[in-house]
Image 1 (cartoon, rainbow, N blue to C red):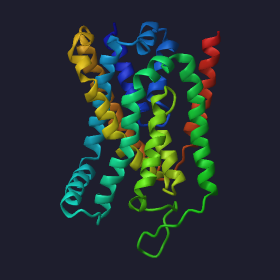
Image 2 (image 1 turned 30 degrees about the vertical axis):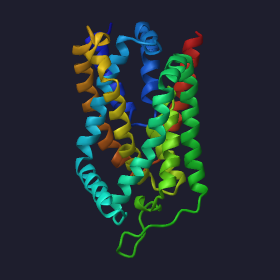
Image 3 (image 1 turned 180 degrees about the vertical axis):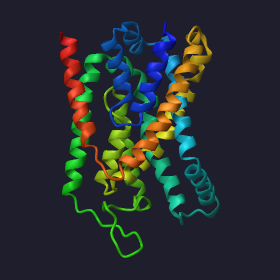
Length: 295
């Protein structure tokens, strides 16, 4: 089983790494191996296990933290969506954002239902997670390089001056572009590939600045993370949850607090900074993990 200490550590790890572009799944596979918690490592790639029930609470808690942080934005998005159903047209930024999120969620939703179990049982292992963590670093670095070479339009703040970082307005994204970013998000089903990382990189490649790309990535992740948790909720309520429900509650609280702090930090971070430090970290952590596993 899992102890309360382990539950809180994994909960904090999940809450932070789900949003920081360094892969939550990769770290929940690798850190237990580094700490010698081999029962948790084995449980993650098992067909059915107590760990899957435990992870349900972490996903739901992380999604709730995002919902709380973006509660005003989500309220406008819901109103905008309902308005488009009545008027049958998209007329405001909130209405467009609602449909961008719907279109962006569809690819990963379909892929997750079809392949999540297969990908988890095959790739949720330390060696695979270490390799994909290195790949994730390459994705982040490539996204930065390609954006710097792109012809990105300069945005105006309305006072005749340009913003510190040029980029498209988020509400100028086309639905098909949101779909492409959604397809990229499906790569996060592989342990070591970051959901927020690939979506932010995808947004950068479509001309968004770092702040808007991160915001869109966090909003896009919210329904996916929440749906994944709710879909697996019967695992926690059923026999697989026996003996871990208390630990799941403790881990969930830790994940909620960590995710709430992480999203607030990252919003400020991406106003001025880039993905490059996270790319470097992923490569170093991946290589170090491969050396550790080979020792």
